[in-house]
Image (cartoon, rainbow, N blue to C red; front, top):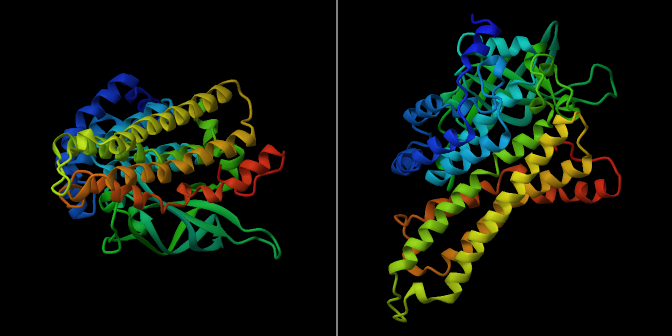
Length: 404
């Protein structure tokens, strides 16, 4: 097994932000060419995963002590947006799987060594639905259950699973935790994921039959909320003092920027040579279509800049060693939650002005349009879950929904 020092040495050639963005942009044509295969197979192609590993994309948020780059979150999200422009399913998968090295860095060091000790390229899937059955036992827990929505699971050697630990004493509160399990301890049901959008994410079902999970392979939600995690004893950089939820919620909204950009590009392409067979009017002369494209272009950029500034602010606070105010945490989680729905509506406005050319499955605007509509279903992309805490924290009240 590699030592921490050896793994730290492997991270010596950390690429720059610019280099990683250049690599991601160069992959857009390849991802476009594989998109149909990705959708049909309901999984990101294995060659894409291999190329992402070679490019170092999964290392962006991985701690340096375990072979990663430990970079600014905005580097990660810049890469994700570009990958999603090529194929939103692929960008979504990258966002979810690629943010897990961050959470794993918050686990006890022993758990990190088990995952990355012999191979720092190992990747991890998840499904945080708190649906597992937990039994306490000496040294840890027995975990059982069935979870849906484990994105990218066929490519991963470990999984993170959500479950509520029953209280030790009657009348106590259950303890929300994430459980880390190796591939030998669970099965993947690849026949569950039949959906109208984001088909290629490979968000399959996970089944566990009373697997033993040691205490050190669990992560308490309250630790993530308080930013007091066991892994900070070995991963001491300010990056890992950020609230875990802030990183995760962005991972499931950011792919929408790439999908929206693909839809805008497709709308422009249709507009250039479309002439209505009914009215004889050219779409390139349609002021309403111009307005819809302009709104999508401008507002998507505005949202991107807002979320970029979010992490600039969060990391600056962390680097000063200060606690991030709850008012900011609530607002930033809310802003992220609005992105997908807003972008989906902007793309709707373009689609309805492109006539019959836009409704064929061969149209390049259809798949990102469907992907954006599917992405709305994720709980983190529902702003209705966030509004109470935005207002409440402005009034000085403690948050109700603490995943922020």
